[in-house]
Image 1: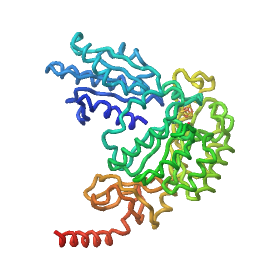
Image 2: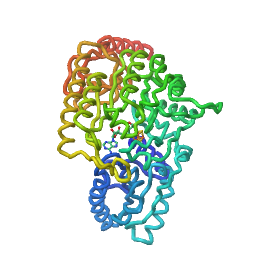
Image 3: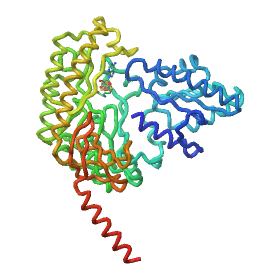
Image 4: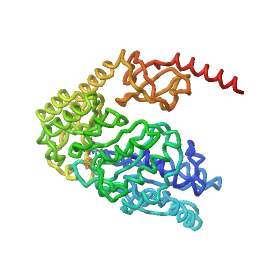
Length: 457
Ligand code: SAH
Ligand code: SF4
């Protein structure tokens, strides 16, 4: 979501003359787009700000001004505290107000003239969730072959460990037409694959052109009809919102990729209840089996939290059992960390750090083995790979299989943006190495068509 937001910030700043650059030392404006989901987020921001302060002061000595802005969820949570602790910061803005960045820059510039360009004190952390999208331009810079498109934001679920409902605000779904327009603009700019985004993307319930509410399954049907969209993914989902229609779409829509990130967090019903997840282990397993009935080759990934308050060895063992039963193709796992203001933060039975470390090690070992097993099972097979960009080595391209695995192939730029049948030769760490099946045939037909064109000339 932050990658998407950063791209949109660049888009709203373009009309007033800003373009992205890769060197902070020569930038007229630096935006730190922050995430607050896990521990130490704010400390990291303050230490990074300390570094930027030196840059800003150095530039000031050369009579060059730098606007420093802090955006995202840390900015939303800390608000004025950032301006107090780091008085050289000029703008603090939340995730729901960045469409107003040009106005903030104008205010900062005016204030700068009075304050010698040092700490211009602009704060805009309102919560008008539904407004932002009405003001964001569809037209913008290219996100590349694979792009994000935000369809839903915020969350009303209030899991006891999570800050999202406090920093991103209430759940909101964008109207269908607005989403399809943005998709068409992406397609015009080389995009082939769209990942629909939302903190709870499968809770999507937007209005279509007739004023009728449709869910994510219906939205995927509509997006599949957009000319040029070749692949669709979505993230992140909540198990309770995996409804029948979405499961149906997995079986029906060929453009919808057979991989899904469905966080479960724990395999213990006691812990799930204490997390306020509102689903049980049995519900989760049921959803997985329905999904696999709908699309048999579904690859699944998940998020896990170890060491949630009150988690016993037995609860942890149940999480391992769940992993062994479901079999994940990849996963993310975290030690529980206290987030200020959340109910779990003040629960009495906090788990000692060493025990969390131990459990994380065991859990990640099981998950890593499953990932290796899944990847190895593809060696000797042909996967459909969307080639996205150049790799680190000469003539190397990086792409993603339908199961969301990273795949490297040796091939020319000609293939970027194409879905190719790739024969998988081997697995290196988490990356598959493969070769394009029709490589030789392609080269021959390209040479032939070039010859024919040549003859016409
Ligand atoms: N909406 C998604 C998750 C969004 S947050 C869902 O409902 O599953 C992304 C992940 O960060 C979560 O799935 C969780 O595993 C992790 N996370 C969130 N808060 C955390 C905390 N306080 N400690 C450790 N991990 C946390
Ligand atoms: Fe956080 Fe996801 Fe729970 Fe919402 S559903 S509170 S985003 S973990």
